[in-house]
Length: 291
Image 1 (cartoon, rainbow, N blue to C red):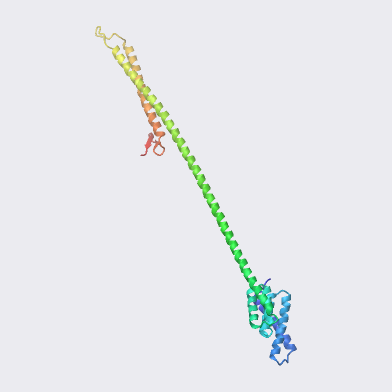
Image 2: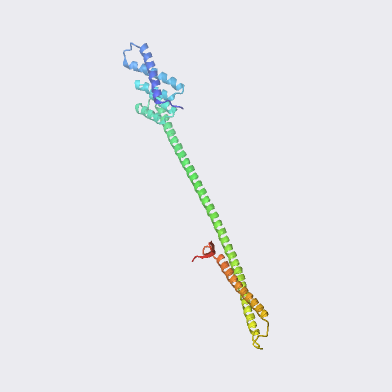
């Protein structure tokens, strides 16, 4: 039930009180007994309070009943009625205070004593239940917050685990690629160096064969002096054989140089990429080696 602001309730209460007091003053101008006058004023105020309570304005009705009791404290029913209106308005603390005050000022023979006692117990029980409900609500909210936090932690742990799994897979793939690359470079090195060695060996054979041909030519040129001239072969034939020897010797040297160079380059290029590398330069290419 909606409770009106205190200022508004007080204003309405004051207005109602003025009307009632005015009515009482008009009808009983000549009242000589102040006690009777207060009794009449309190009765008029309680009548207004009763009307407000019937309309559902329990907060204002409680204030009016409290004013009626303040005006005439001999009628304890006003204080009990104020407590009931506060109770119905949901103001349990105010209702409990009113019931306790009422019970402290009446005897057990008062007609409303038993009701006030029951109402007090009900109000206290309702207050305790309200406090328990609020405690349960806070506990449920706390559990929900803890559950959300736990879910968030689990999701974060799952995310980190997934990232770690992906990182492990990526590292294993990189390791595999590195091993395959090393194997490929090792194979290329073996093939390249082998081909270079074959070329160098072939060049060495050409050189050896050229030296044999040179020895044969020298043997064939042993002079058989007849009149001081070499007569075993003609000069053009000797020069032709010497040209062939020179060509084969040069070819052998070229093959040896090419084979050794090729083997060296392949060895450098197929080495560890962070230690050996073939880099361009203004003069061609350089082999860079890091130790």
